[in-house]
Amino acid sequence: MRQPAPNPDHTRMSPNESRNQTLAARDLRHLWHPCTQMHDHAGAVPLLPIVRGEGPWLVDADGRRYLDGISSWWTNLFGHANPRIGAALKEQLDTLEHVIFAGFTHEPAIELAERLAAITPAGLERVFLADNGSAAIEVALKMSFHYWLNQGRGQKTRFIALSGSYHGETLGALSVSDVALYRKTYAPLLLTPILAPSPDAYDAEAGESAEAYAARRLGDLRALLERHAHETCAVIVEPLVQCAGGMRMYHPSYLSGLRALCDEFGVHFIADEIAVGFGRTGTLFACEQAGVSPDFMCLSKGLTGGFLPLSAVLTTEPVYEAFYAEYNAGKAFLHSHSYTGNPLACRAALATLDIFRDEPVLERNRVLAAHLARRLAPLREHAHVADVRQTGMIAAVELVRDKATRAPYPPEERRGLRVYLHGLEHGALLRPLGNVVYFMPPYVVSTDELDHLVDVAIAGIERAIAQP
Image (cartoon, rainbow, N blue to C red; front, side, top):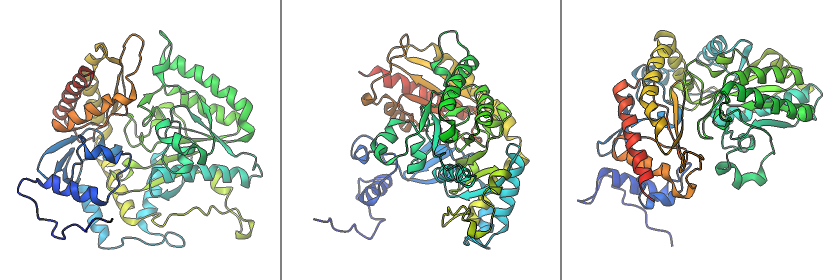
């Protein structure tokens, strides 16, 4: 039997009920949250209603504060409720909220495309806008396949991805992902990618450098291309850091080698910079560290500073020209989203780019990254830490049951969840990936606030490993 509707007076609380509890109860009556086993919220995992943000901090309905150590799923660059981005949005609200982007255009989208083409690696001159990161991956996959089809090479229907990769949750994006937690259930619905061994430096042999390991894995990729290039549209990678796969990091030389192999074998190079773009790795875009330009670059998350959903796929003039023809030629790229080019999102993105233009963001980030590295360094000697790794403003600590053998904790023990819960109890939002405790804070965090994050994480790690 359907339960009766809740009392319409949403402000009414029982004498012993907090505002957090009231909002959480209302939420759980109807909402279904992402990447969540909802049963957890019936037990020890709290559902926290957030009522406002202040720079790197989030404030819940009962007034408790949490330092956002993961930039709210890696989106927030310059703090919650950033006044500069907010002011741009308020101005845009008074002029144009949205317009169909087929047959119409507007200045925020035009300027955004111009500025993205100017700051991304050379040759990326065409910009296709979409709603979110997964949508950007879908666009890039379809555009790559369609390019080859328009060139009379319709036998190219497959994609090469890295082991341990993650590119999103829609079916195409999930098809080129290799994280079993997300992919396994839906495998019967997905394309089958060709998997190349990841250059993840964690897997290098004892004494083997990250660069040497990357070179070895490029040899494996070459072997795959020798067998499959004739049927391959593109190789897709997350440059430098495989984020959702456990913050796996690799040497930039892999990207330069990948670019050369794609040129040699006639396949596209898709760079998924959705999570690593806009300064996360120490440069504005991760591909810069290898001096390469991909055929497609996917951007989202930090593109709007964490304010609104927006993504962009940048590609080259030759790709664009392959679709440019009389209508009856049937070569048009007909992919679309209702909110493509949303003016509000474009204005948020422009304000975000203004901050990069006007402030020494990357220079400040280098100082913050160095401080974070110093604070995490002692964990390298911890009996249950197999690795401490860092690329720019992304750092990760790999927890293991046995340091000597690197034997992991069983997933069902949910050691990382213990770190998460400890963090919430002590004013920090840390959301480990399995047993990998990672840090990806907003760029407005102070060194004192980084100290707080690290102190809470270290105490959380001790708490997680102390229990059987």
